[in-house]
Image (cartoon, rainbow, N blue to C red; front, side):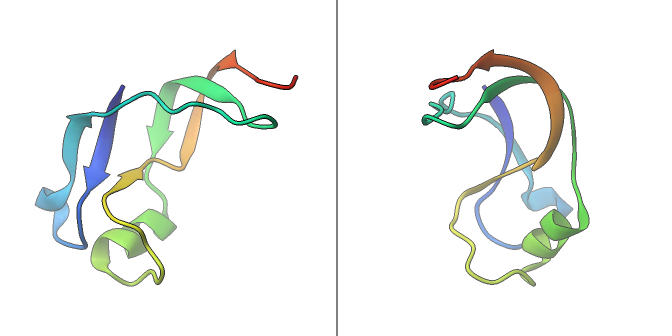
Length: 74
């Protein structure tokens, strides 16, 4: 899948479009084919280094809308 990835806090130029492996949903999770995504204030804080406890690299785009393609466990 294509994703916006941040390796560490930095300027806007630190955001990179990459191809990463498709996530595998766990029971109780859903996998969606994203049709639209946005960057919210939390992700802005992540990019600026203001969020604590981040694991790097990090895929951004927590707010998304799309179509469910897998839902293990119902």
